[in-house]
Length: 96
Image (cartoon, rainbow, N blue to C red):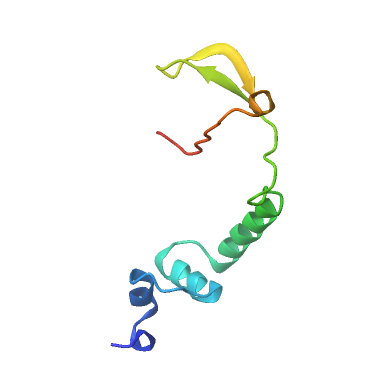
């Protein structure tokens, strides 16, 4: 069966590349938010992304708490700039 004859949902399930309009139509069909709410969300995301560092650019400096292996704060803090020249792995995510 050709991809053109599949529904939008079937194409999405197959991992087909969808246009922004197709993604929007699909999202609205499976969610309980209005088109205006979705447009506002997309606008906020675009504004946020405009200020995000781009791949290959220098990372912005920031400071974090040092944790124990048990994830308790030690009272120490570390700045990214203090680690210049050393290997650093950054993992962003939620572990809840």
